[in-house]
Image (cartoon, one colour):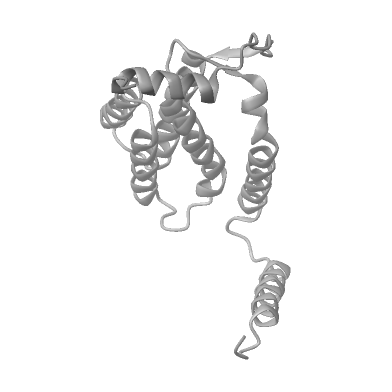
Length: 195
């Protein structure tokens, strides 16, 4: 009894996967959601604020600042993702190099959390279309880590802003202690012996 190949494949498929019983009913629920366009809008606003804030520290001509901010912001609006986010970070860094307090402008420490937010929003904006929705639970997944990182950076930036231009001998001692702790941790992990 010779059957054709398609008939043999169908018979094999039925013997392997046909159970003769109905499939179970599966219920899926979704939680509260955020539209994708809000993530993109937040990304565009964060890019504009970052580039403009860094530009105001550099004392650029107003027209030049508006042009630079506009170009980067329009690119972020048209093609949201990591590339415009990174270009915004580099643009802000270059603008800060033109500030009066360069290269150690304390504004870097309060602009760094905003730069982190721009990077994270760029990631989300590239992975979620404007017409899609994201569950708040998915956004909340990394929110604790991101919130702690931004809060610590803001506290460090605020402290640096408060002591900028002053002599702070205890801060030097704190830095030496931090470097010693870092060195001790590195030495403790690798004592030089082969494993």
